[in-house]
Image (tube, rainbow, N blue to C red; front, side, top):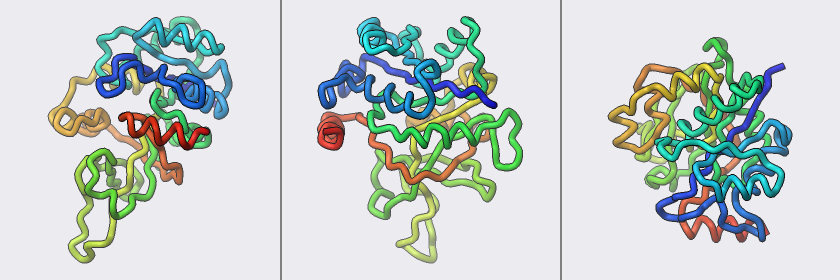
Length: 248
């Protein structure tokens, strides 16, 4: 049976919400909520928080979680997860699949963690790939919203492209939505994640500010599973208040 491990990247210096992992939701820091939801999917000993800040690490340890300090120079959440994975494996952890759960997903659906990890295989065959993510149905009114990332896939379920702009235009019907909304949950084999950490940034990635485009621009596969979970990431003060209302 595959050993699945969740790593939660949690950077302290958010531009729009400084100290974001420690902002309170229903009386507890956000990172506690994310960790707790991940533990519901797996177990306490299969979840760790990767952070660049001692304040976050101390809070995680105070509620019984495992914190791994990673370099502040990590350019993305994926890079931070890769750095933490190396630490874990150097300590003797057996890991077959890594799931990257963003540290600003306090309403994480535990079932989604299991779903995305089940799509990962070391060899891309039968609809499986060494990296996977999820997508949900896209509402018509979301097509023009740049904060909602869109994805289109090939007939086997592999991602063709991700974009903040509308994609999959249907010339025969203006009301038909062909893209789906990307849900930013990722799973990888350790060897594939290590490979990704060594890839250089790419033009489309930098233009759209979407790190998953780096994988596609290097010609590597991403399997995309369908989910009904509607993720609510906390990126702005408005998002924070919305999640606080839902969490109470």
